[in-house]
Length: 405
Image (spheres, rainbow, N blue to C red):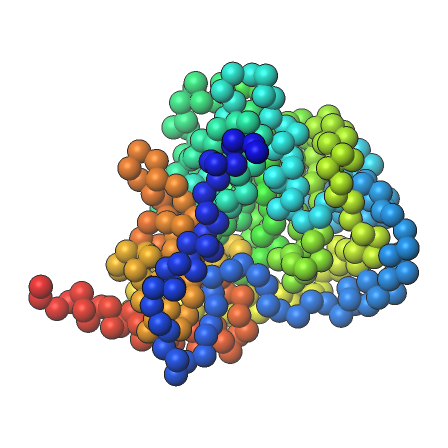
């Protein structure tokens, strides 16, 4: 077996299951899960109908590149959403089976193993696929801490020159998972300049780009920064987008990668061997979803309502900040994050994810320590109930911490 498999750490939810198994939850309360970033809003009925209307396509093999109509729908959406000058749906867009698969696969195709000690740079905390993709591509992950002092974005100016020289692939995630932080257009432009200087690829995971609170500005994207620079070939740049969060379609497994045609052409070759063609009926459903914005706007309204509810209820008892975007709250805990999560489950039957489980300790610092990720994916009513229970739990903690030792 591939020896690099031994480098993979348990997935965060495996660790969470063990943490919860050590205690018994309050049986008098219904369980509310805020741990997994799985949207619970209903999937759009018109998307379901599009799949039903095309179910006969089960009789046909899909192609790896997918239907031209789907690439065109993705390209048109990108151009509208990020005010691009132009994008070629044939050469600069590839539909994929969800961005988790594509992010992992892209690293396998992008890393040049013949070069000594290649690095894949990643935010820390991070989406665990970045780490696994790096190891199994024959590279070493290099983690960039995302701390409160830098707006939960990496401090790219502090990265040593020798690290940039070994970097082959830089993953960025904006809006961030788990922090909800976003990169500015100027920060994207700085990364593009670094990619030019040191010859690496910028891979921007923008799967949460359509989830922002009403009244805030829509998050910008990497290709948008390229467009402002007149860089319409998107040299050294790729982005990943998905319908899972945008359209409440995690089970559809549909997204796309877009950007530099020089990178996408060999990646498409890789995918023909990888065997990951998207079913035709799925593609037809995805076309319907990318061509509609009304359901996305409704989605945002619901998340805005849930954010407002949590902040209103918890603000009197704990320092809670609205994240830039996504559906996550990145809450600072008054006790250790794993203990906070365990006690919250035991006493209030609510599951949240310890921040240290989605981070790595580097130079003695774990950027996720002392925080928990709360995914506001439950219904509005459940989120109100969860916020009230969490407030009660925090009030108990505050009383305990105020008592003399």
